[in-house]
Amino acid sequence: MNALPDDLLIQIFSIFCFHCHHPSQFPHSDSHDVRTNKQTLAYLSRTSRDLQKIAQPILYHYFATGNLQKETKIYQGHDGVERQFPEPDFLPQFLRTMIQRPDLASRIVAMQMVHDNTLAGYAGLTQTIQSLIKYSTSNNLLTEPSLPDDWLDGRFSEWRFEGQRSSLRRWLITLALVLSPRLRSLLLAIDHDAEFTYTLGESPHPKLLSLRTLGLMRHQYDYHFTELEYLYAAAPNLETIYACDAAGWSANAPDSNHGSFENGFEYDLQLPNLRKLALSGLIPSNLGSLLPCLPNLEDLEYYWDRYELVSFDLLDMLQPVEETLRRLCISFLPEWVEGLPDLDGKIPPDVPSPHWYQPPEIDYEPIKTLAEFKRLSDLTIDCRSIYRETDRDSPDRLTNLLPVTIRRLRISYLYRGMFLSLSSLGSDASQRFPNLEQVTIGVVQRADPKYQHEIDNIGALREVFEARGIEFKVEKDQFGPDPTMMIPGAVVRSQLISLPGYRPK
Image (cartoon, rainbow, N blue to C red):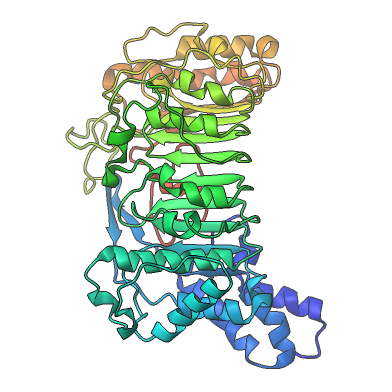
């Protein structure tokens, strides 16, 4: 093998690198194949000096702590999380190597971290951790973590306060970020106490200038989007954020932010270069306070559920991104609710039968028009954001809603009739929407029987659209989708229901 040219060896060894094969996904270490391939690269690095210089840089393309929770669905609407005791993640040892080998630290472009307070496997690493703290302090990187006076005894699991373990864990994660000058992609599984105030906020202004993509998801408890303000500030070139479970219910954040938009409050977050935001869980009022912080946003995905407190106006909230938005995907996500018999005989006998679609309890205004969104070309919108259940279908509803720039339209969770408005759109598309290429209707998994006949008639519109060169598709949108599916690479070993229009990779 030593006789092979270096460029050929790089191609061969890259086969064992998850990041090389999936550069658009966040890395992980929670599957057998990924771990085995990582071990193979480590073995190759120890074979000879010649192979080491090829294999080691590939081995250090990414670092993943693993320990992501496995979410499962036994049947649609019943979900659970398999929680196992965390395995050692080797983060202190990894940091030691980064300090000793800055050439390898410069190779790291992607990370996956879990913020918890277990510190599994750290008991024998007190001297290593002490040396990391000393190095950081002497090089003016981070302030020291808040630790008990007797922490060097290594009895981390016996520390009285979980916050102390959390503090050390957060400090180690932050040090890994600071020591990776080429880090472009980061996935964090966090809880509501994972803010970086005492690491990034009170340190000598470290910057993560290469970081472009950030993924956030809950570990055990949710968090609030604003809790990561110091991480955003340290990464001024962030372009993409995926954030699931970002409402902060566990920390009672929605109570303090209740009515934030209605009261004229804007969050003070530094995200000047953000182009794409995929967000779930954050209450709509808080979305209205967030969007003014995103002056260059082009792609917005926003999903919310039944946990809303007051009525809201989605169109009003979207005004700050009216001039920049190119793609908008917005939807209420209906849950799986049991309680009705299987009237149509289409559900397997061993699967509970769902209730038909139930709109959110809060009576919020449908979006009247997006005509002023002059750059918007791709729109996914749920039926409830177009029509209330009691609204009458109007021929000009969709033609008034859409901007002239629209290319792709998807109506998700169609739970009632829209034949007139869709028919009018198809008839007028050539003149009013010359760029329209595709219309997709996502029919709700189970609708109220009184609307079923109107919904079934939608398929007859295919000829109207295709006669004008517009692709027309009808799909089925299932209850109980999991927003985590929007984070590429975050659902390791999971069987979850996709978001409307998504196709798992």
